[in-house]
Image (cartoon, rainbow, N blue to C red; front, top):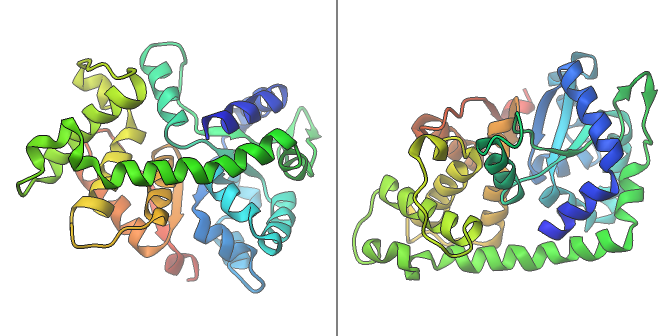
Length: 291
């Protein structure tokens, strides 16, 4: 997954830098949809008219979707053809999610960057210096052999995440929770320590300032999302789609509006209510979009 993101960033670096500057100067609102929403928009007689009614093009709305969603959509030729049509007329952007988003947060905390932006690239639909970029850029991007190979690897990474997160209570950081009824806060504290050690600090246990840790919003969403989907009810049967839902959700703190199915929005609203990281933004369901 990380290899795919790094390749894409390199492939569109010059365009992305200029477009990102244009996005910020024009004040675009990031409207972030998960895979179910994107799929519904692509279907015949789907949500496209409802979406455009709620988020008109002339109001600086930028339709955003994650690399995970792009992977899922690209596997269905019919949906992909419809999505490319929508992509060519409505300003769109591809976002990063956890773990690459977590790296951007680390850079911000370290002072290496002045802000945290989830946008990976938006090579069309936005005019910069009065010129529109290539409307076929999504098709061109997906046609690259390296990108094709990397997209195929997303399934492997998803399987690895699912296997790992399904067995967290076997890990050292969770030993004290294994044989007792643990609270949400106990799980989240253990999870963050585990993630920092495993994903960011090369297996080393390093204490992190609590105020700095609060700036890692993607980690907060991941921790709470894993708790609610996997561990709040140990009788609940989980699937690989659950981990994809959560990974997509990690980008939500950095957008104006997050659109998802009822269960995911319910979880995200719980995260907004309970977090200490200043996460506060709009979220709506498919039902809301149909109104």
